Length: 333
Image (cartoon, rainbow, N blue to C red; front, side, top):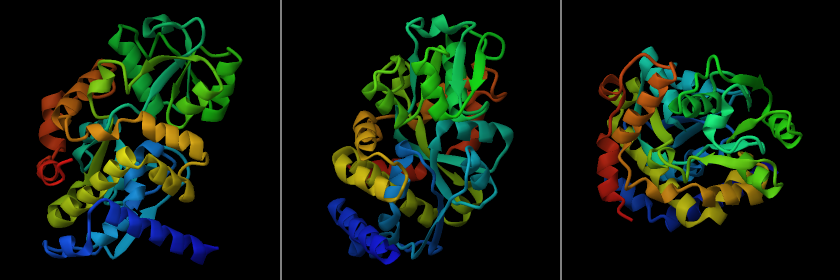
């Protein structure tokens, strides 16, 4: 079975590389990466799919030793990135901004897409302002679900630390509580929004893929360890290129991308995974400005009392758009 899975993974990867127009000859004509090894995180997040789909593309880029690190639980990717246990990762922009604010040696390199989170509410919640004094379920305090919900409520004048009752529950239990009207809202992350809509549980109060201002800024971004970028600029650009090409695949071939993610156990349901890939605007990475995103999220995090630094400091100390800007020109759609 393992040999069969390895063969199928390789076959899919080769097909992916060819389909996206990246051939060994193209990569060989450029400077090779300074290191053949690249380490990424593997965890259950459909929206971060490009970094998993990029595995064979990374090999075509000259990384003969591509490793995916995995651990149980939430929130470990950012710590692993700061500790140099992984080199590059697709993750939520606000988490990386909070790391920069805390002084962690991480740097944001570019954007992937907007629209990860959707706020679902009970019949009593028609708008974010209706959440004052109500119950919102999140997996744990300090994780992305809690951060996004905190920013949303603080943006309409609700203090997330004093005027929200946070209910700490697993995602599965949170969906059950919303169905039973035992909580007022749930911050949902793919594929949960797709399941909630399919089962007609609650209703969408805010979609960050569709509703302003959230829909105008990158949520998922590419980040890296600063030392890796300093020592390996060619490798960094090659890795970012592979991830952006995989992002294009999510936009143009969602059926193929969904199958890869299910085969890799990133997600269990092909139907929900496919719908999530279709719902997320992966085709917008060329048109959006990552600096605007960092400025916007930094202001929202500061507004919610989650960081101390202003956006200018975050941009100066924690961003490097060189590779992203070059690749926007090279990978014209």
